[in-house]
Amino acid sequence: MVASAKQYVNLGCGPVFIPDPQWLNLDYNSASPSVVKADLLKPLRVDTATIDLVYSSHLLEHIPRDSVRGLLIECKRILRAGGLLRLVLPDFEEMCRSYIQYRDAGQHLYADFLVVEIIDQCVRKYPGGELAGLYCQFASNSEGEQNMIDFIRSRNGERLGYVNDLCSPKVDRVYQIRPSRFQSIKCVVQEFLDAIRLQVGARIIPSSFRRNNISFAHVGELHRWLWDFHQISSVLSSCGFGDIQKMTHGTSNYSGFPFFPLDADHDGRPRKGLESMFIEARA
Image (cartoon, rainbow, N blue to C red):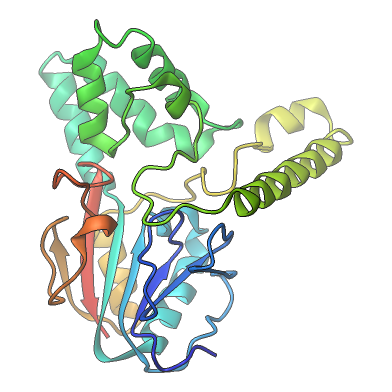
């Protein structure tokens, strides 16, 4: 179990975390001593009612819908009475409203991008999917497509300044500390071996089934569900949370919340763009 010195938990932190003794940063893979490797679909190795704040950014949409309630119940368990849960995840309602707005206004390039933004990560069969193709297309002609580059940055925080960056789904953007070369190699080798196992295993499956049902996208790329405020509020309420509110990337009911680096970039913009919603709830 976690020592009582921990006050804050960052679930599925990826490369964006705070390397501080008071923070417990958890993820499926770890490339830093400040991140603890953990299976977040199993009971959290954290004492009951010991945590002040549980934070999670763009994790819930990657979890099977029928497993989300179990994770939220675990969050409720480890939070002290009155403790705060802060969730950041894609806002399906915002995406749909924006798509209709751009289509109705005749801004079809923007509307077409919204279609890919909504659907691609739910269905992609290879790393990067359709989004990576669009990124490379616009970045390789950056002078002529500056409006689209700026639009993509506003939508999901992706920076298309360098084609080499966007072609990797694990770009280092707001790392607080960079993993050592050895740790990075370890993660790459493990992912490579996992991919090889999947490829070899898939060979024994009929090709028609393989094309339609097997994805070779990296871990953390596929969206298992898209949520809006009403849906996620209902689940939170059923788990015993109260005072459920929508916040912004720069507002919180938790005094001293570290908006940078968690939810805001250096320039104060939302780190994951306008597609994100920010929800807080009390245990």
